[in-house]
Image (cartoon, rainbow, N blue to C red; front, side, top):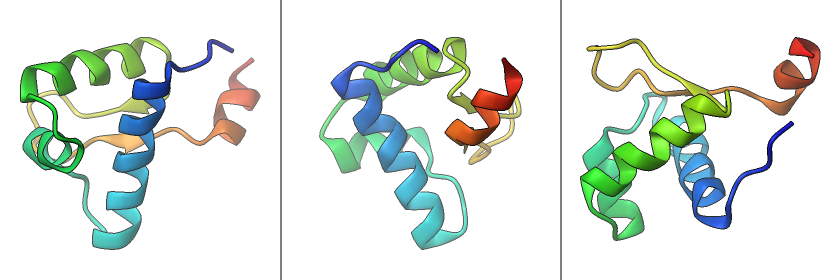
Length: 77
């Protein structure tokens, strides 16, 4: 499994925590505001997390970012 950079891990953790606290996925703007980064930077991190199969979302559907738990990733091997 490919590891995450510290910043990718921070974005991943933010998404997971936000979903647990709010029962809805964060928007890109929520993540950007929460981490003090630009929305374009967050898009790049989400793209990297998707390529590493750590998050998924429904294209074109707002607030559909889902984290993929490590237990699921381990089963995919």
